[in-house]
View (tube, rainbow, N blue to C red):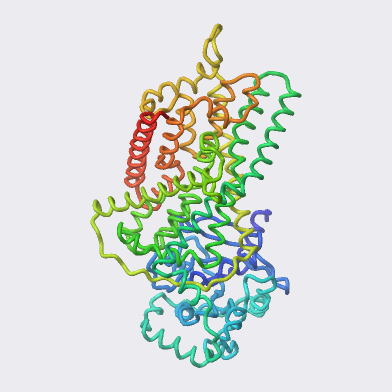
Length: 629
């Protein structure tokens, strides 16, 4: 038997445990605690629902595979995520192994909501363990839960866990060790779930809670007191706006030092190579193509991580659902639900997870409109372009003694994206026909301090994704841009820079006929082409283009002073306007195709965004010229 066959057989013998629970119950934190870095993320076959699987070993030395199922409130599925969870638990997905056991994770402070799902899964006859998570929070509030009695009422092991604390998973590991290798199970059909009505299920939940829990000494929920301020109809939106404003100020202020360090390191390597390598194509490729291109993108990693830090922290502490509640009425005015807020906020990092997160919106029209406007949120890939142009044309000075002018401009660009998204949603609502606005129903988790372990793991995953893009897609495109910019060489007696005569120069001059009315020269046109594959590549492409079109000291200079000297202010403002609406990268369009089931909506998206970008840039350029820009 070969090594591959033995590995497959060993994997098949390793028990598969599924983690199941409501959103915000700490399920993913428990998954991270158990598996650590031993995780594999992919998509379920045929859909874009994320599939996370990991592995771990128990204290007794038993190996387990752990599947983190999408959050669900019920197995009576209303969203694609819940449908995947239902089908996997019931063993109905082709090519997907049915779990050998299920760990139901519940929020100890909100058992009334969580236990309905537990009772539904129990009717399928699966071996189960109930993980009573967040017991530390429940005890602080004075909520008393008799775990032994709860286990007797449910007929399954009940263990207490604190997923965010080291060692908080030990009781669950002991319970899994006590499960027999071949746990008895029945294979009840999904119809067993509907055999008991929702009303009867909730009645059973209340009976169990009355028998096993006591709220007599509940000191009150600090979350409710905080929400009196955070969810206030006047104070709440003001706090939200101020918070978003501070985030964008921090993106510029906090990132200044690490960006300078990265830039200095890249420049140092480039100077070292330039000093020890003779003139030639290899030196040009390494210094100008790879270091000049990749380095100009890598320098923006600190700003991207700072933005992710705030998004992850706000999500972890429980604030994001409150923001959705606050914006429900505003978004309802343009035909959206407050549920669209979290997908749209996710799109500030990248439109792809934002589009995928729209699956949680039950109404099909609302879900489709959210997908269509998600790319208008200013994703992190735009940030390098914004930062480059702002640094070159906007003075770095204080305004009012506490605000940074560059941060204000960045905030204005983000706001322009949000405002345009709301306007486009309103138009889509009129075109597609309005539907009755559905009331927003979602769980508001308790507030807690963000957990450093989860933040660090989240930031590491995003940094790894960004660096992978730098080392693969962006590196490949930078080498391609260098090649197109280098061949053929300038003819004898040429009066223009060498790049003017290259393949890239020919492409740029051809495109300039279309883009000249909005102030784009052929150098910018060259950068727009690879930017369709990945937006941030546009910065590296500009660096490659301008480095090859300069000589002497200008070659060693940074890109910022080069474009500050080469462009007019009107051109810079026009390019900023272009990137507010810029047509999406190809990977985003492919995800839209998968989510909508065809090419119709991706083509509509590409067309309307290109039209908006061109019109906005044309108006901006002409107005700036008329004002002396």
